[in-house]
Length: 369
Ligand SMILES: Cc1ncc(COP(=O)(O)O)c(C=O)c1O
Image 1 (cartoon, rainbow, N blue to C red):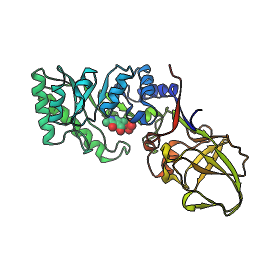
Image 2: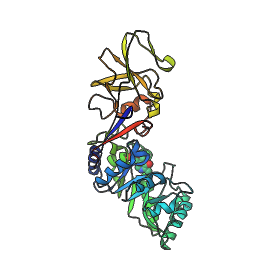
Image 3: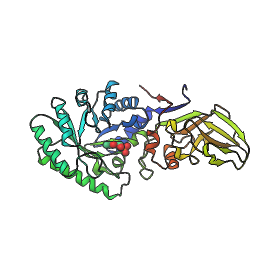
Image 4: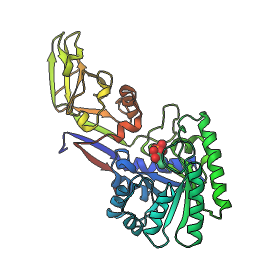
């Protein structure tokens, strides 16, 4: 381990997760979402493994992500959905990246950038984020029909995104699906019949078959993490282990206070271990005094404030030496906490725990082909 700390990513398990998720949406094509550095797992190796697992599509947010994939040799179907004015549309279309249009101006910019580019339309069905809403959707439908009839574009898809799929009983789900169906009908009435209609993310892929349509866009579940503890995803397992070793060990007397602000003091003599990762690695400072790490087949609590480069754990009376292994989080097989445990401790969601992993980790890929 050349760096102080290492992320080990199991690509065999990633491919197994993709296979398991196929069974949840057998009638739909599968898109692996690899944006945001594959949720912290490393975009290029993960994307390569996804192609090996025969995913039908990859999905990214930004043009830079799409072009990075192409530069790394990826050349399968690839959808990009978050461009700003001035995005390199010509380069993207030349690289066979399918762009998403969320409004008429964007559709015009895409059409102007290539020879009859393939484009997907995004309708805002209630998330109120990207996508065209209300009269803007009407305008986008009219423009898309006109431009397709004129041979300027080929509309290959229409899609939207759920606000509350991780709460299967939330009324937003029925509402958004109904709005989506109406939007697809509206497009058809205008003479546009894209082959790909898609709405479902991981949670909807698992809980809501009516939303599968032609393709499901799978992010968090491919990494083996449930969208929410209340929405378990059977048959997938976490693919990432964040591990390091103790950088220091010291026996301290009762009354010793730990880390910035002295927010924890030992009520008895104990052994403290220094773990050389902190918020510089994307470890959430809000988990100070709350999270645990895996140590010697059990867990050790984080004590005091999590710092930029390091955090302190209480090893009690367990034998410990500098260099002993520590698992910050992982699949949980060896007693270590999971990303969800860290999310609970940090007051956030497991998505953020993995996606924020940054800074000075090295990444090791198992099962790379
Ligand atoms: C447009 C879009 N589709 C699909 C996904 C995948 O969602 P999930 O990770 O919940 O499967 C995301 C991620 O947030 C997204 O932004």
